Structures are given as structure tokens and as C-alpha cells.
Image (cartoon, rainbow, N blue to C red):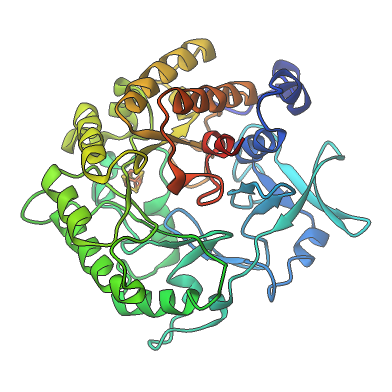
Length: 418
Ligand code: SF4
């Protein structure tokens, strides 16, 4: 699928129709999927309502960075997070193919709208207290550790070595463009990170989990040893903040060998592990993720995840997918029925080996190679969320470290709350 979608509203089921067709799926989750798929912009009044003393409006992440007065993201009335960067209102700059939702303020209420109709009431993400502090080295702490409503995030390495050869980077990925645009340090200082974590943890009841996620670091005696060394060093020093054997932490990283996985599990406080396969199809993976395919391979990636379950234990390992990117042309699917059947069949292989699948929604960012392509229908993405949730229940895989109350970015794991 590619290009802007002409008359797309006439060709697809609407939000209302998809909600009616899937009474077993929370309407909040379906709204979340559609906002991520189509994007969101803010009216001037909605921006003015984002008091920077109360709400998070600054963010340094590996895929996006912002310092303005626009809310980082949204919460729905039931606590569902919508992790979705605000778009440029000029959709010719970021043509996701379908008009974005609009956040407006009406009669004192902040609401999500489409075609001038209210869809849902929304709130902005609250700002954690440490965002206003600086490290001893003078850096704003919001640049060192990012935050969702329920989670801290650390990205030690702000680049990805696959992008050292542009032909090897994942085609949907914005990490290299984000790094070049923002001219930031490539590697965070451990001292800055530990100081920021210590400050963030002073706020009682605010945060549930610490996630570590950054680009791949390929160097070392063996492939990826430098990346593993970096995490072992940081996690070992983090231990001083907790003084306990294991802490609710998630490492989203490259797929490691058994020896590398054992170093992390046996020697640090790390409790869960994720290696993103990105797309559940070997042929499309090889095209979308050429660096991963060349260095580790699709089957190698799977085998390393299956081994990780033996080491980290049941319910402590999963893989992320960029759902919708399986339609990216020219290698992708052209039929939603075929894509759904194939993706769920492959997901079942992961889940039958104890590896959870975390669905994210493909957001065609302006600074990626696939920016002019078109994500699939809301109906497809909703059926995929429901199908993945059914499989997680069938195999009793409960990835609590990546669910609605811990991460908030995955429609299928949001469904585990019911
Ligand atoms: S491994 Fe792929 S998706 Fe992950 S940061 Fe590197 S290029 Fe991006």
C-alpha cells in the first residue's frame, strides 16, 4: 500500500463501525489504535491548556525529540495511554494518508475530535517532578531519563550502528534522522543517569517500572559485546539504588547469544527481556531490517528469544512488532486477510515457546524511508490486537512487564486487563 488514501472514509469501516463490530474489544483500545494510525494535532486552545508546570511537554527519545508546549501524549478516561507524538498540522509534511484527529477544548473540557464530532475526553500526561531538575553536570534531567505516566525510560546509546551503513538500517526507523537533527551526545553518562534515577525515585507512588531501550551497538570481541557491557555496567551500579536481587526492569535490546543473556540475568537486577523482531514474516523482515537479517537472521532472532525464556523464565520475555508495516511495498502483503492469517500463525509459534508479542502501531514518521506509505485499515489492526490477545490467553503468556499498567503502548496487551 502506498500514497495518500483518496476517499479513504468511503472505503474503510469507520471508528464507530469497528467498535460496534468488536464488542469484546475495549472501545478505548480501538480509539488508541486509530489515533496512532492516523496521528493527532492540537488546536491552539488545546496547546494553551498544556500548562508546562503540570504536564509533560518535553521529551528526548531515540525516535523523537521535542521541547515545546505541546503535550507529549494523551490519556483516555479509563487510564489507557496513547503513545503518539503530535504531528505537524501541515499533513503534506507528514502525509499519513488519512487526516489526523484533532484535540480541542470545548466548554472547559479537552476532547479528541474527528469531523467536528467528539470522540473521547482526554487528559495530558502528568509531568514527573524530576523533569524540572538538573544533573550535577548541568543537564536537564528530562533529557536523561524519559517518562510515561507509569514508567521511566533510559536510552544510553542514542544512535544505532546498523545506520552506520544507511542500507542496513530498518526502513521504518527514525533513530538516525532524530540523532542527526538534534545534535546530541551519542552516549549518556552513567553518572547523569544514576543521579536522575535517584531523583525520580523520590516521588512516591509515581512510577512502576524502569525500561532500558536504545539503538544497537554492534562492536566488541563478539558481536554485541559492547552493548552488553554497557548494560551490565549500568545495571550493576543501579543496584545501589534498590539493594534487592531483582527489580521490575525491562531491557529492549538486540537479540543476544545465550552467554550474553546469562551475563545479564545472572549478574544484574534485570528481570525481563525484549528483542523486537518487528515483523512476523521472514521475507518481509529481510527486506525491512537488512542489518538484523545479515548479522543475526530471522531464525537466529527467534532461537535467541526462545533461549531467553529458559533463562529469564515464563512471562519475562517478549518481542515487539510494528503492526501494519507488513503492508509496506513492494515486499509487503496486499491482502489484509492473508496478512492477518499469516501474522497470527507466526505469532502462535512465538507464543507456544513462551515469547509474548507486543503490538505497536506503525506510525509513518516524516523522517523515515516509508513516510509516503499507507498503514492498513483500523479493522485489520483491531482484529490483529484481538487475535494476539486470544493467543496470549491460549498459551497463558502474561507479559506483565509490558502491559497496560506498566508500558501502555500495546493495544493487544492493553486487552489483558479484562
Ligand atoms: S535495530 Fe532497527 S529499529 Fe532498532 S534502532 Fe536500529 S535501525 Fe532502528
